[in-house]
Image 1 (cartoon, rainbow, N blue to C red):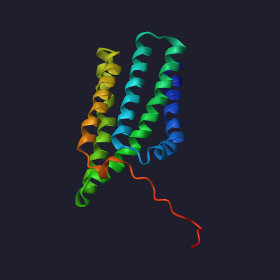
Image 2 (image 1 turned 180 degrees about the vertical axis):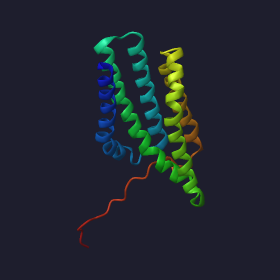
Image 3 (image 1 turned 120 degrees about the vertical axis):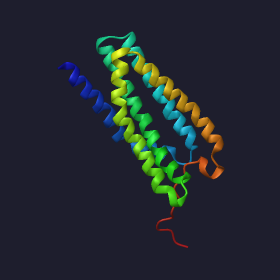
Image 4 (image 1 turned 90 degrees about the vertical axis):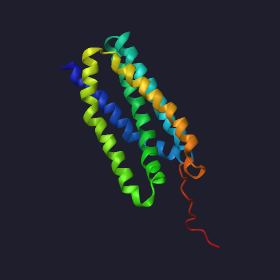
Length: 173
């Protein structure tokens, strides 16, 4: 029963962090290099998965639960950076006539993770419990490295997240 309450608290910490941090972090990304922000998200996730690995391998009890809670909050921050980048990047890269398909493919890939991830994660956890955070940290590290390749391929007009245009409200000529 206690483990159910702890898992709900971890989920709540992740969700509340997203709710609180999404808008400020989205504003923070304006005018920045898209792939640098996405790389930061990937590296944040690497650290979070390594914290989970440490919690599962070397920590116990409340200390392990606290470490996983902190990793959950950190992971949410990475999610905020990711979501601030992915949709605008897909829109910027898609030709006008294929924009809906690009966004649809992105949405399907995101949902596929929710469908496939728990099953694969359960198999890995059953066979080798510490294998899941190890594998996830390596995958996130490879994805972060991949952003460097993509960054070189982007045109200069696509590298940065557009900053909003400042409108002079109430100014008189």
